[in-house]
Image (cartoon, rainbow, N blue to C red; front, top):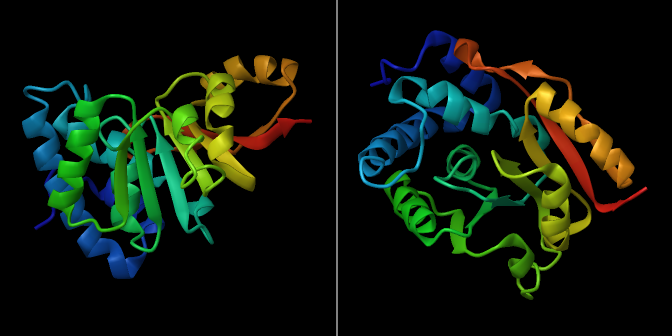
Length: 220
């Protein structure tokens, strides 16, 4: 049964981004995620987004990066918090190995529990900082793509995660157009190689988004 809080607009958005053969299992997994998220949120501050906006502001926003995942086999989500976008991405793309990283142990504990509830076998969650993880042999220069959503400024992020990126791999930062405009001058000043994608609208009037794509080989 489809969650009544999932609108037709949001459903259509998700269908454009999640493989059809995976879609029903994806919805089931995300519904289970919603339940455990808001139950846990009563005692642990994981999200300020109300349940009525879970699908548009959490799931659709997380999944919007899907067009950039083609051909990728592994991904690191830094500052994963309650598991966005790492948990929805792992649920949508079972062939993608997702590593969720956060410096707060309680959040990582939650992500591990949520992954088990969702039946995910392609996600690991690590209590660590990105720059520390990059010094470990198993993770140094390991990832084809790194994501960051609602985390820090882009200049600081690319410096912290560059050691995680393979050659020619990039950091994808979830941003609004205003955030991109505010960060552009400093990135150019520091000679960081980056681009901003075209903006797009989230379903249910949940906001305008784009991705800032920053190169790990950052100097122009």
